[in-house]
Length: 509
Ligand code: UN1
Image (cartoon, rainbow, N blue to C red; front, side, top):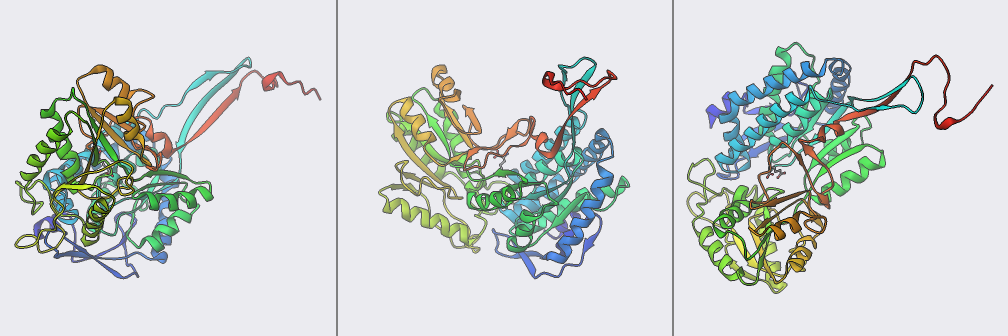
């Protein structure tokens, strides 16, 4: 562990604010970061307060003036080098993600790979920030649109993807000519310190000023609140719970700022009689148990045809029994701890509510103790038979708790599927084309992501990521999500030497 921390430049006590190469002396309280697996302290961060936040914002504003004038492909070259640096640090950073957040090492490495992938995508995009041209209704006029850098982008990220979500936003924002101020989750400050160092080293080596990539680790009530109210941040991209997003969205909307919200999911998989069970079982298990059920894309609900639901539950129960739970850095572990004891309590409360509402636990839900489980954050993954209308099923419980319900007709399955407040990710397992096409059609899944014969989690970065309804409507990552990080300008050029008004208006003086 000490070697990993040393390789990533993490000290025993780390300042919580940085404008790049420069780290600011912070005046806030100490924030200790604990491993959820061992319960032991890893290192400490001194939290950023409003004074340091102001210094960071000044640096970000001044850097923006310079960075926006750097040609986009040249900005892309900086991002390419950040991608290379991430490749060099992949092993250490993946291990630190696993240590601090608790996801298994494979998933920690996968998360860093996702960062590398978005760097590659952003490099290509730096040469493709296209605008349209169109034909003017007036003779000898030309119309086109340009995309200009937007300003300082605020990124607020969650503990569950402590580094990838920063990269999705930051790499696009950087090629778009924006500067970034990042407030990571207070549960995962060290991975943020490591990322900031990696990006800052590259930016400084290329001779650019302080303030392009910035970090502010502080309390939501001070720094997060300040960011949401700050008119110097034209865009805030926030990942987290729906209550957090509703609050933040109202504040940012109140000042007519732009928000990209990536909030809770309640992702379901429909399993039809035509499903290939040898595909469905491992995909459901990864979706529900992977990352200990702490992805916004985790599978929360199974909607299975009544003819197969019992055998599906039996197979899932058997698969769950083989899941090795323990130290996330151990190669044979498939499920690590939950992030903290609060998350364990939330899962316990949800299980209690399942019982109170008339549901039936199939397996799991125990809190593990004994050797290797001393932190109190390890649970066994749980399956419950429920009805979709239960209040608890309508909520996102951020834990490995899978709800199973059954249906008789596809219409009924789709109604159950869409009858939740959230709308992030969804899947159907079926080899019947009419079923799969119905699921993907206008009358099918109402989610931002809809898959066939694969799970709800583990999206690639090439297309847009995000969801509808209480998931917040934001889109990040690939496709045209970059446009949200830029300012569109419509330009009309008159080279006729004459005045000509649009819509044929006559205004003769
Ligand atoms: C999240 O949980 O906030 O699709 C992001 C996935 C990952 C990203 C999840 N690529 O599961």
